[in-house]
Length: 116
Image (cartoon, rainbow, N blue to C red; front, side, top):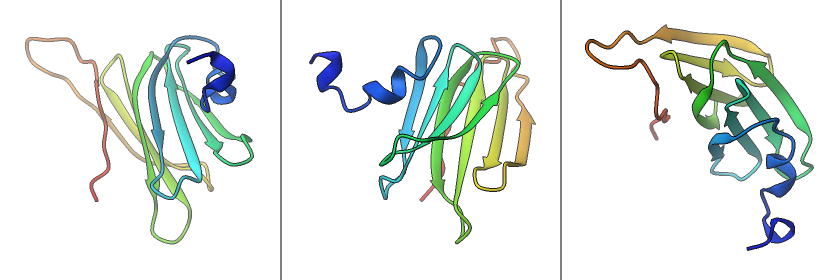
């Protein structure tokens, strides 16, 4: 598939480095991208408008995005250093931050997922 035929191309071109995670909401309205450029970005999937861009201290490996109550969306991002941060997109509020410290291995967060 050519880049021009890829529906994700406009979003991926907005990222400065390798994309490690992509998630879209079930309603198709929001798209989240995690990248090696240490960012987590959230877009309006219809207008392609960048809604939020948060910088992490380390490479972002994993993202997920989901509706949050009736107040918008939340995004979870996991990074190379073991941090998982959950933010409310519309209010730009950090709701949760946890540092994983595994024994005997690297602290990478390879995946994050909201439950149904």
